[in-house]
Image: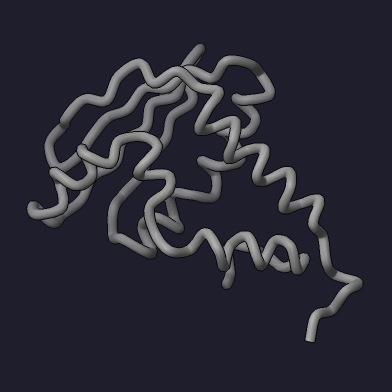
Length: 127
């Protein structure tokens, strides 16, 4: 039942490049506990990586909140990004802090459906 005229594997490939960039091409400067969560500072190694972060951070916070209830805010600053993740559930604070940058971005079981929607040419944020 695939609508082959909508298939766009290149969009999926570009997203996987973004995921590689946000994971392997940033320096995590700090991950500090804050009330109810964590504050993370990351520095992209290039403008291309910064563009990947912009795309990921535009889409990921609402997905994370929908799946976990955690609030994620991101702020692009002069040379780095400030990421704050908090929860209203005291028993999940340690989990957020333990997951840190990469774990938070990898959290949730939405990734397979997200990638499959991209490959099918659908809006991956409405699956």
